[in-house]
Length: 551
Image (cartoon, rainbow, N blue to C red):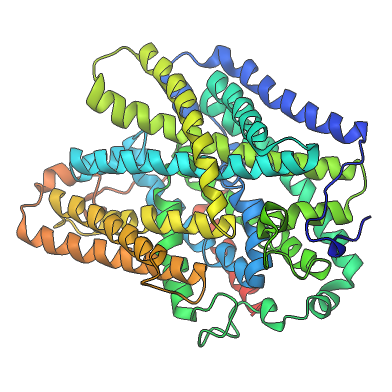
């Protein structure tokens, strides 16, 4: 093992091992093979976009998490841990689990019961065509930008491992994902996401175990990193004297509510996996099944970012370009601790995470484009086969745009800072609009539209002020959390104000869309251990426990 601390841009090498190369080649071949195998099943638009609503909950549950296990989860969380310490685990234990429980118990029954193909579809039913159109366009843009993040992450690993240029690496990343998504639609993505979940876990578990053993366990890691503030979740959040430079209520509101609920409740990338389940009970179980491994990933994805600081204490500080960025925390940890052969498994795990993220983004984008933009505004009366062809064309177009989006990431210190910027701009105001629409029947069509547009516009204006140096936060992540709070608040206030000045829809039009006007038939689930409330309670208790342990 090389000493990575000795170089400003440590090289990653797989030592020309044929086994490592073979593992990577086999993975790429297998993912494309899944797409080819499923191609014959894609006979209708529902098969292509929603897998015919036929998949068991254990598959959709792991795919629900797998769709989230992209560059955000692996490279991004490792980068965040190297930048902010264990506070980055807030993105799991307060920024994910409560929202996933809410999605399962309250949101899925609404989505599944209406059999809507997308989140913008719900917005049309509850509000109007203008609200759906605005969200469809912004969501498609978001998915392209998110796909660019995964593509960038995959490319820098290929560049540093195989010696390819960044441009060639980005193009190769695009071609591989394009092949299996275009062939197999959502089912191809879902089955690959299940495979990728196991590969990612297989790559991260030994990395954490070997790294902790090498550094002398948890206490040894604290001593080696020599930054006590990096090992507390909540203890230093009474003020701003903590790595994220934000108080506890900013974390609880900005991340624990506005960002997390906004993402998990309204991001069609993950909701789409639950809608592919075989029945409503399976759809509700989907986020809850995903919640338990999500808790574990608060360790698997975070600890390597801390471990690598014990051998590279200056990572992310000063110059060094890509080679010295926080984003390289996980690849450097693998290079430090994995021998040949095992390193190949680790690299496949990384590539799997990027493939998972890109595929999830692209399949969600092509569904929204086809159903909520193309069919709604361009060609509303075509046959089903035409929309399947358009979905495949949209996949190609989205991948081309994602190639350009990959270069935007170069302007940010870490992937996680960029991801949360996007979530604050797009998801926080959308979540306010959802809350008003679902729980306040007086909300009007134009109230929802005005709130969504104004919240998004204010979030963009705040970011523009930050770029101009007019507004400065204690850290990039603090800016992301407070920006989400403000965007949500503006969307909520404007939505209420405009609703008070405009006419609401008749109650008859809101049945099945507003909580108080919806007959909530419980999904039948005879097995006690599959009951949604039981699974939800177990996930919340475990989450409380890890927050106490790492307080």
